[in-house]
Image (cartoon, rainbow, N blue to C red; front, side, top):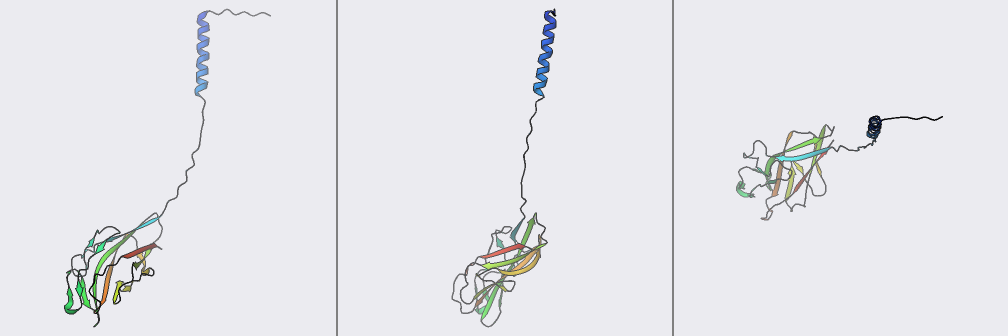
Length: 190
């Protein structure tokens, strides 16, 4: 059997155009996919900053240098045993026994948290070097050492100002010198 087709040029062009459109449509329909798997850990954190107490400038409340940060200074001036001598009007100076005097000043500690379910925190402190004989460093009547952190509080609330009082007790026979100490505070979420 013999088949013959007689197509004119326009019909051939129309058929070729339709075939090209079908080829283009099938080429555009090709797809590909991929997956990206994400792993992330959320880290809880706490921060500790020192603030001037609202009573700053009055007796017992000296201003902090660099207040509002975790790295502050506190200048207690100059003090001596005889005659209740002290140069800073903001310190609280007193004779605590016949042999010791004390210089003290209060400040505030604020501990905040993020991404933590801990209801509160505990606060501890440690001095960096052994004090000279006859000198005792305390916070809220708790003696500090350089051999480990000493607990100050068992359960303080996050975000609240907690007032702490730094006390330096000096025996009346300590030689004239500059007392310089670094106290590290440690807040640990409960």
